[in-house]
Image (cartoon, rainbow, N blue to C red):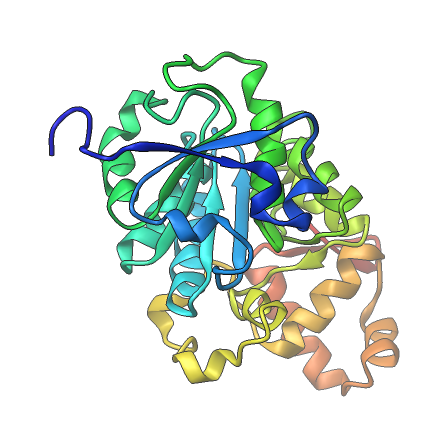
Length: 297
């Protein structure tokens, strides 16, 4: 493959992509695209599109979980939409590519300007089966102010937005705000309360976002039965993958402190089941014990 990738750059009207896209973008007439997946960008041709966003300074666990989430979504026929940045974005695209899935990379530069250059190989792979998109004219170099603007395109192109790691002041926060304002479903992966990388996820969960404890949560939002996809295989689990009962308890503790008795009343589960579940969650550092009550980390 040569430096120019042998792919022509096309321009399509923003309006032709669909009304959901237009609800998220302002003052954009045309979108530039490059790659084999030209039909992926228009709403009438695509299967469900899932946006995945997060911090550039991701943790190893965040990278691994994001990649697994993208793999499962891709196997289910979804399209991964992200920004090809370092960290979470790159992990999302790579997860789709791992399983020959489809992915759209929305750049903060022209579609012919690879940024970051470290992702050149990924850029080339996306061109072969997916799509590179941008609102910026070909040849435009990446500038800091481009990326917040770019985030509106990512949200506009997705049906569900997933946040796996992020900080309260990062670009992912902008994406979440745009998504909520546009009425998109937002899902977040909870993490340790004291981790910088989990600040955004834990905050948006408290504000009402859906909780991801394994990718089957996303598949359910997509209307797909995860059991039909063999999702229960160990190799597909997240680092904090837990059972339905554990998830029910964790969802409560994300929003409030509770002791064993409180949880038994709230969940209608036996004391033994509550005790076993709390031990599992505490062992996996998802909850902690504080002054007689448990709370999510």
